[in-house]
Amino acid sequence: MKRKYKNIKIPYSYYDKVKGCCYYVYNNKYYNNIYDAVKDYLGCELTYHFIYNNILIEVYDLGQVCEYILLKGGFSIPNKYKHEYSLIEYQELNWLYKNINKIAFNEYYYQKPSLKYLLEEPISCYLKYKYYKLYKNCNYPKKVYSKFLKKEVFVYKGYIYYTINNILELNYYYEFNKPLDSGYQVHEHEFNLVINEVFYSLNEFKIDKEQEQFYSKQELIFLDKLVKKLKDDKFDSSILKRKDSYEEWKYLHDNHKYFKLLIYNIKNYFSNKKKNKEILKMYKK
Image (tube, rainbow, N blue to C red; front, top):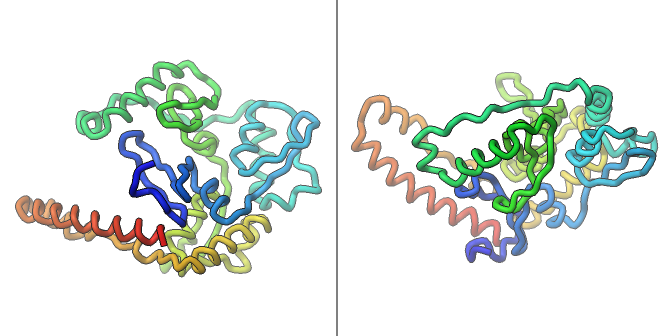
């Protein structure tokens, strides 16, 4: 483990430029997704039960339920366990089961990388090309283990997908916070993204009474525990929201003020470096 990631007390996310994907670290351990890191941080987890080929199965996230449905065996959620799912989750999973033989999976097409992307992330480009060659004839989603990424991924028609929902695009729906001034309701379509939002907007994060219908009871309890523990640990989300002045960069770029743009980029580089150190320090409190 890299020295700078040691002794992190709150789940921390980082982007690996070489591997081209996000990872998480907490308590001197690496994680492939935010949910697994947070459940260890909280000491509790979500559980989802269902019947598969007449056997009661217990899993710990909705993606695993979908993986069983993709196997095309018998599937049902007994009334006894319906409370573990929100109404929308329950409806979407049953819809998937009934339509699995005729569903059109989300599909990306491999494209040769631009020279700029090839120079910036050569290993990521090679990895995508390698998986395209290996799995371009894979006409049904398949879960494989990548030794390079050190995580399981899904492949379909030569393309890598990091989560099952990237292929299925189920219409899960989770509302939170108050509507924006535009009237647009803040929401996500994956529960893991709601967890990310708790970190990003901790002080403002709230699920109103009328929004609770979009979650199961256990999901509401899980999020409430996360909010309380982060506040107890004096986590400050405001530092994550500090943004660079895109307007200034755009003005300099569009008006061809390249010397000033160079100075701006240099200042911004050192500013971001300082900010990242502050952020990492906060995760180690």
